[in-house]
Image (tube, rainbow, N blue to C red; front, side, top):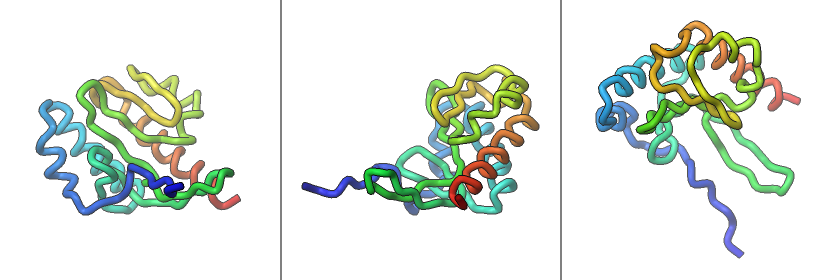
Length: 140
């Protein structure tokens, strides 16, 4: 039986070239703003993870099944229908989520049409909360 290899891995693709190919001018501009925000929060440079995620930092994980891998600490993807911000555990902050503005969310992911739909200060606090929560869980 072949060992399961994660599809989403860090690679050497240029995040700025990737953003340059995004069709929507608004999503391109929002992506550049998210890069600056996430770089400032994490202190890490942007790196491509798989073909469409721009991630910052990395951590190793291991499931109870024994499967393990590496993933970015936080990141986003400028998809055609929304900006997808990867918050992981940060998504459970109901107080901040209630103040964010127009968005949708799923397990660990925040979906935003455009940054002008949300309060950028609250978004920054959510990203900071997600990273802090993630680091706390990894330390346990």
